[in-house]
Picture 1 (tube, rainbow, N blue to C red):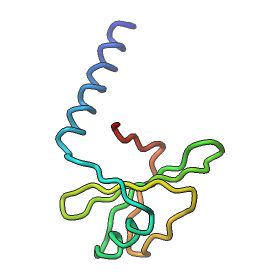
Picture 2 (picture 1 turned 45 degrees about the vertical axis):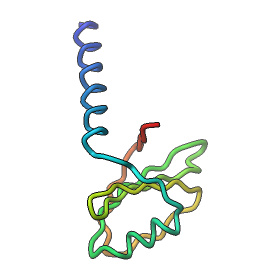
Picture 3 (picture 1 turned 120 degrees about the vertical axis):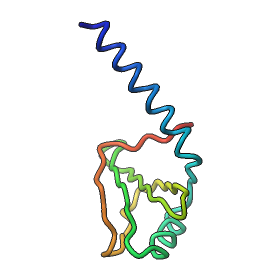
Length: 95
C-alpha cells in the first residue's frame, strides 16, 4: 500500500513539474501593478490564497495575454467587482 502511495505522490509531483514547465513564466509584480493588470481585463480570473503566520500573507495569481502574474502582500487587494475569484488553500510558485 505504501509503495503505491509513494508512486502516486511521485507521479503527482512529476505532473506538477511538467505543468509548471508547460505554463511558461510566472511574473512577480508589486500589488499596485497587479491591480493595474486586473483593471485591463473585462472579467479577470483571480486565484487568492491566505497563508503565513496567522494568515498575514496573501498571494494572488491572474493571467493576462498568455502570461501568469503573481503578487504577494500583507494587505488585501481590492478586486474589481467583475472578477471571478477562486479561493485556494495554497499557491506554490517554483523557485
